[in-house]
Image (cartoon, rainbow, N blue to C red; front, side, top):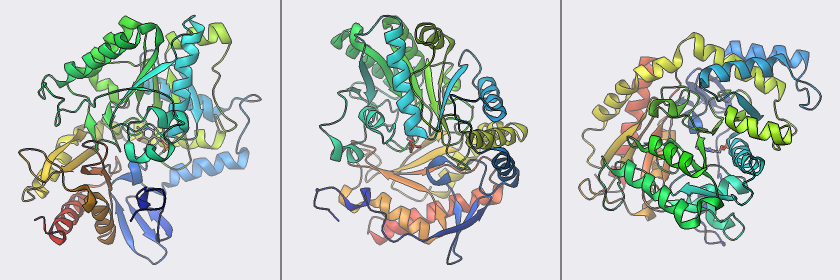
Length: 448
Ligand code: PMP
């Protein structure tokens, strides 16, 4: 399984994959005619299902007019309409955006906006980022630097930014000396301690995922955590960045994930659900405070790319967001959070290895453990999560199992992220196939 570089092969090999042929709604078909139900939106992307005609028509209409007007020459109806929609959805003072083509670019722009803000307000010494373990912010060098995902970083160590790293805030695995009730406060204190240890005049920003995705398995911010983080960032002039690439755009049951915590970040990233995978689109969104400083001092943000504000991508975003709004899909996701939780609980109640079921909205995960009492993970050599992914695929289910959630190496979690408009029958199929796949793998491994 190991390559010459000592890295597990799965990290840089896709092996023999089937060819995707077409899809409709919650179902995807390969070139051999095999059907898969999309229980995770790939990695939480396809939030309104596949091949939506309204979205495809909007994209085609835009392509017939013009695919892309370059950002230093033109604005466009699509870009301006999307900006209005996102502003309304964000509420508060998150009124400014830089559009990009994905999550890593969005995070990269968030980091640069934070640095540019500190420069604009005369705080050039504030260059350092603070982030958390068990977090994933993307695959470009800056975003990878702030990520706390051992396996995905190992090959690049030595060339990454020096970042301060805090414990993950996880009610199921509270840090030493804390309980599920006090872990939020304890983890927020770690942030304050690190700011003071380094010196506040050195700290640019703190970045975190309000509901941790790939690196933790749908770990929501513990109660009170985000509010305390907001207070601490304000106290020490540190920019608060919320990475909502995976958990945002309605996935957690509110359009902004942090809305539920009653907190507005200074800067925020969204991507996956924004254009629902129809075309590549992401955004770094920032508040009036950040905009006033940056625009006042430098005129405009010094970030963005050739395809920033890509017209057809923005048109896709507008069409997707109109459907999400018209069909009240965020409200649906919010209302059905308990239903999905109950269905997962019920379907897996006979599986002793299920340690925790958690998450928000249609972003929920099942954590598997070798021992429920001690929460000890399974032997990492077994790579259970990879086997579950393969078994689920075999059973015609796309889900998103990830590993390393316990300590960067150990742990197995299965992430579910169904489309917001999944039917009740489809949700039942997704949950049943998930439970069946887990059961089959545990049995085959002699663990059940
Ligand atoms: N941030 C988070 C929280 C993510 O989950 C991801 C992708 N899984 C990214 C950033 C990077 O996004 P992308 O893969 O679109 O570059």
